[in-house]
Image (cartoon, rainbow, N blue to C red; front, side):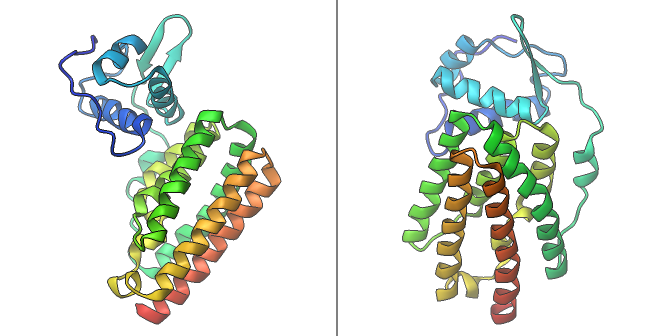
Length: 244
């Protein structure tokens, strides 16, 4: 498939590599890029979307980590054939009650603690930079007394991508927004002093996870993630009891 020069440049409203990955993944889903098709070259993608080579490589790395594409050395990058994976079965998971959310967090404790440990060992400088940018954006929002759950979710997804294990990434992507308990809290909580306390502690815990990953401390990263998710569970129970 040839890249079209008529395609508009990507909007610079979020992480460019993730936006480009989302765009390519949408083309895979709608059949524009069919299974087995070769993706445009790096140069073609750069010209079509007005992004840097680093952005293109990060985007393709994200797609490869999630099993959407595969790269053949010296030949190019190709769309993977669809297959039945663990994510196929997770797509139907329904998280509706407080008990469901707490159960999902309990799953996350084991899953993401190991993911953080692997990310500390395998992360790239580019992935570490993505985590830093996301943390800075979350902290800026906390200072302005606002919060967007998608940044929280993306932080955890980048950690799963940094493991280099596409199954971990697939599980995280399939469970989607249900992995972020903050979005289940009602408007009363969102406008309460407890919300700011929650967000500040979340930011501090994310910093601890980031710092351990940055220094490639697998044991420290796993412990920081476990503490963060355990605290998230306890905070959620406290908030629901107070405002639910």
